[in-house]
Image (cartoon, rainbow over all chains, first blue to last red; front, side, top):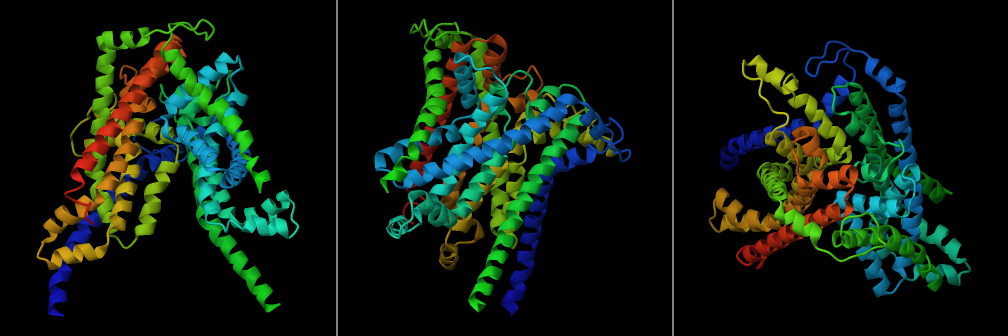
Length: 279
Length: 278
């Protein structure tokens, strides 16, 4: 007992310092984000004093066609790129799990390139590629590039789930009369759903947040929100804060969904299972 | 069974076209003469000669390296204690989540926010003004650029170090204490060597984006603050010299690979004394 009493005050001192350090770190992380959101509602142009609540910067944002379009393009491309890359990435991962070692190693190797390369290198490569083919830069080039850098993340997130599956599962399904497509949709996909969902979410946020690659491959007036912020940043313009807040709000919503939905799905599943067991 | 293998084929074609071809184009353009056409391919080292003979570019390369090394250094200096504090906290999971969330929010948007805070009339200078100091010119300085980079990349360092600290078997620490080591000795001789792999992978995650970043120096360093990423950007979007731009990005890739190699070499050299036996 006495010993414990001797140790406790010492520990407390250390933990106060630790707590303060963590607090300072969190302030550092979140201050710019909070600053952007708060000052997007400011009623003056000031960078430092909040003089009153107003929605004027949002009004200005919605009156600015380029800004509204950039929001539309960002969401459209993120949604389309997520759908395509999740579909292709999942099928590829399933195929890879049944492929021989050489193909597997080769695809994984190529897959790593967009992840490991600095974004600027990927960006200039695609820029030269599209220009050489004389493809008009704009929505399509943006979408293709986003699909290109999203698929590797989907494959990376689905592969471990497939690896943990029983390799005979598929044979069993086929022996019992499933067609290959049924075997995939009814047997394999339900087992790897969590991998697919997290792959899709990574793809969505990667596409939604991308600036560097988009900046190099876009053209003919098609801009996403990041490019918009970058090109307008030369002058003080609180509408940028409003636009930034749109990005922050959407990503935060996605993060909340990620962290709550699995719990909800789990609950629904438990309830359903219970019902089944009582029947 | 074999039917499923066919699912890979479309992606192999896609990856060959969309991933490999652009990379090959960088390689080809880097070794050809000026001019945006693949048809008249002529091997040449002109772009590399131009880069290394012009002192301006040497200066830019040096500055980029200094900024990246400083960024990495500060990320370790401030990130290690944070990871250490997190690993000993009761709210580990929540803190890991809180450290991860900012990295999911657009980097450009968060960097832009610092412009408003570092401005001469910005939030921080107004705050300093309350104490009668300042205003300090912070925007468009090396300080702002390094701060912006540390801000963007330190979560990666913290999470890597945190992971390696979490993996340490607590009984090692108890054993060291039982054998007479005091707290400082336990940290220096057991915890620190065992967490080095986390620091090394953190360095990889910080150094690479720090060397290649071009929007952080542009937003926080002003138009005159040129790092190697900005030179590449200019070559492609303003000057239109693909050969020179490709050559610079190859030089940048070489710098990254060499520094990774050095880091791993140092890691291996220090390893036998520390963690190898465990």
